[in-house]
Length: 201
Length: 307
Image 1 (cartoon, chains in turn cyan, purple):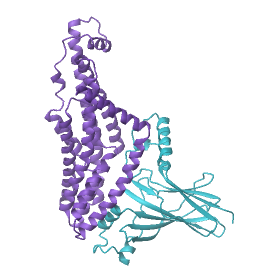
Image 2 (cartoon, helix red, strand yellow; image 1 turned 135 degrees about the vertical axis):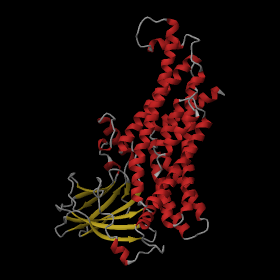
Image 3 (tube, chains in turn yellow, brown; image 1 turned 90 degrees about the horizontal axis):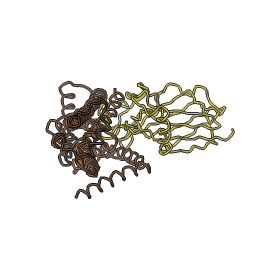
């Protein structure tokens, strides 16, 4: 039972920064919030009170990093794995930018260092909120910096496969879901993925 | 007429079964997800237009709120569980239950309006605390109350079953003190006249029941309505927010009314297929016990999950 339904929709985009040795050094994550949540944030923080759709420099500075105080089991919603399935350790987020787009959407970017810079033969990145309060879609472009020979391809969540996996996980615990901490860790299979393949340097 | 009802019930049951078998529920889920995103975007645009004083913005807001209510209700929800379960468990008419579905959705909107008005202007608490209150307090509370209603329905069904058993046991003068499952089935087909009046069973649907249903649904304000109300209050257009919340309630009601009609039609269809009134008077309370326990288990889990 996927009882929770998302209240926040975020279009996510990645910018992968490789170092000179060709290892992944950092990743910049851009979140484009849906128009309603953006409006809620603007009202809550009393931003753009003149409704001209433009933030002042002071407003942009003051609320830089407003969405980086992660808690309650949410740790940024990003996973990057090597092609052999090893998860990369990502550092704490540093705010890069905070702005309002012409469509009235808040867009933020933060940067996370990759602690053990992985040689990128292949990488798989996925963005999701395990509790599904936020619905991430990785529909913003993936950018590559520092290497020229990489291809990024977006694989949208395969809902059929995701439901099959959910059914299997439920069967494993006898269908007994009584509390959230008992719910199978299934969020990942509902997530979009971006596969990055790089040829040798 | 009876035959048509049976066929209608069977057709709906088949359609639901087939849609689950074919994975259409997943399509529905995706559709609801996309729909909510779309509605959320349109809602933001309507609010911005309203704030900017554009012509027709209020009508746009009403329309968007209505469809937001529909999409919000298309997912799993407490109102449908309760109303649908009640319609399946007890002898209540489709019209009456539809009315309850409509009133409870509107009452739910009123709860949201009252909460925001009191929260913002009397307590002066923030949006985050208010939606937190809705999610952390009213949501588990509502599910817990629904679980209690489920148990209550099951208990009422069980009492009817026990009454039936006594009605049978007396004339048979059964010397054994064994459980009566077998006996009941036997007697259900032997045409005894010791049935309780069908009216006893029909007590379901009384005013007290309907008030309980409305109250249990209404106690939990919908998050979407809270967002609209708080936003409009902050933007200085709270009256538009009230109208929007009510439109949202009507949108939600359109789904719960459908569920009310479906559940009553299914039950009536299934029960009228039974051979005689003896079987009927046994089947009705059995159904009530099963549905009541089902509601209690689902809502109980949801309550624990929501804490």
